[in-house]
View 1 (cartoon, rainbow, N blue to C red):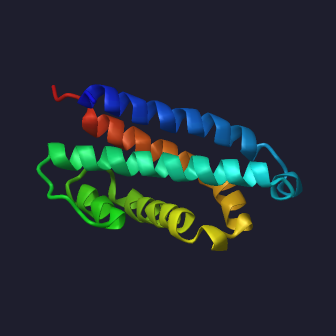
View 2 (view 1 turned 60 degrees about the horizontal axis):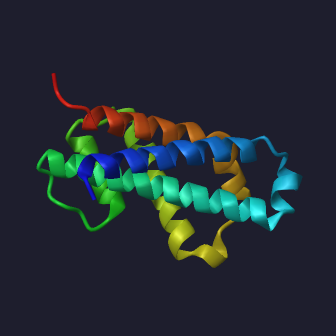
Length: 141
């Protein structure tokens, strides 16, 4: 697949997911936790959004000559060290990638209240990470 098209599709995926997650975030806690389809949708959209950010981060890293990393948290650290995003966002983005790992690898142990909390209070972090990566992918002056 063409690099530019791949990047555009990942960006579009995150933006669409953020819109849908925004709809889910409007639900009160009881409505959310009592409907497995809402929980499943939130988990899936959070997971795929964060994975798309990791994929975009890997493209930024390759563009900057940063060696590949085996762990997504190491990739975030390397992007931070390369100045891709401000230092005050490092811990947030590391936590985000760890949360994605929980969604992927501990699927039967995901705390629904934690998913709801992320849905209600951390969607903006996904958007901010996307904005940082889009800036890093933009052609130079």
